Amino acid sequence: MLGARQVAPDTTCLESYFPLPGLGMLPVNAFVIAAQQPVLVDTGLSMLRDDFLAALAETIDPSTLRWIWLSHMDADHLGNLQQILDLAPEAKIVTNFLGMGKMALREFDLSRVHLLEPGATLDAGDRELFPVKPAYYDAPETIGFVDTRTRVLFSADAFGALMQAPAEEAAAIRPEALRDGLTTWAAIDAPWLGVANPEAFGRALAGIRRFDPTAIISGHLPVAIGMTDRLLETLSGAVGRGTPAAPDHDSIEQLMARDAA
Ligand SMILES: [Fe+2]
Ligand SMILES: [Fe+2]
Image (cartoon, rainbow, N blue to C red):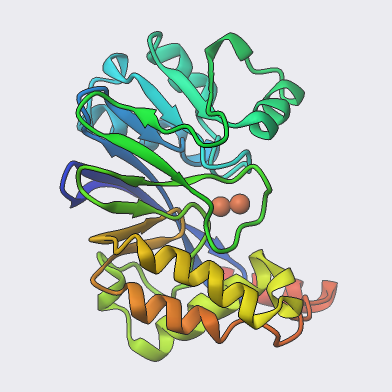
């Protein structure tokens, strides 16, 4: 299942859900920013390629894309990168030094890279995308951003949540379910939060609060409008609680059989 929906000014979400045995589902989102120089943020899942490319084409003529902002090099963020590069010959990939190195390992054409140097912003014509290091992440090259025109904050993997059913907005998820989904996914995706210093993590969260975003868009959460304090407060409780135990082989088989039934 994959669809395109405007979730904030100038911001369209290409949304899908990835099932996880026994845990529910994880949203997997990419975004189109309708800037003067249009930006695609991440490139979706390869197994949903046809649907992803159709949803993209429904949103924008891919050949007009000027930038592909890659939050990081995990498979759920660059699944359709080569196809987009072929469809968008003018587009440059925005990443940093480490991201570029990982692209070289995967044999992408590095002449298509626009290296975002430390302290630099991306000029998209009518706005800038100001790079933001999310409060937590699962790959060191990760870069989110604040859109200086809309003050929408893209948080990459941060604020991702496991869910039991799709939702159009994070605010539509039952509060306890959202809290559990956020903290469980954070513990799985960033297990170092289990041993992180709560004060240091609190400072990282406060850094997000200072941007005072109008909305938070995440690779793994429906759009969160006016929920910044709630998300930050929930996540502040996710540190220092140890790391979760992963299911063993037998229990994974049981969970997959149950989900398939
Ligand atoms: Fe990731
Ligand atoms: Fe991810």
